[in-house]
Image (tube, rainbow over all chains, first blue to last red; front, side, top):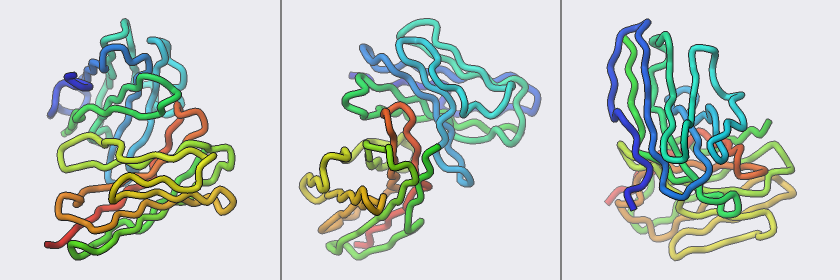
Length: 114
Length: 111
């Protein structure tokens, strides 16, 4: 099993640019989560999907952030326009069943906005 | 919403000693309490979890205890080894969808 795959692993961009982070969940998993990790705020839940439908996006910082899941095997997190305070590691995680509870995390996308 | 506090933020122990990390949560409706280990450059990985109908769970050198009345739970690692060095996160949730993580504990095991 390849696990959760995220790309890019590292992204350096300038303030104002659009950033798109990508995630491929584990095949057969029906829930997908986007987390942001910073030293100051730790691991924050941004948004999650069940069966490709966004369930709770209350953690999305502001309108500059958007997430989509067009099908069961792909999700994107977009930041437009990006700002230096968006610099963080963004994790995608998938889960097979609510009964198990276990989240399987990808290796993260480290974003630096200059 | 749920608020999870974790202590200590850093912990250094000698190889072979035990390590204990403690967490408290605010929402009495929470019923699922996992612990994740994050190694450098990697995503967090589940190491053990406990549900509210159980007070204690053990898996080899790792154990978790839960006190629902006091709303706190703890991770115990015995006979620590250098490869246990990592950042550990506790979490709490009601539906397993709304997982809220503690701030993390950086554990260092000295050889």
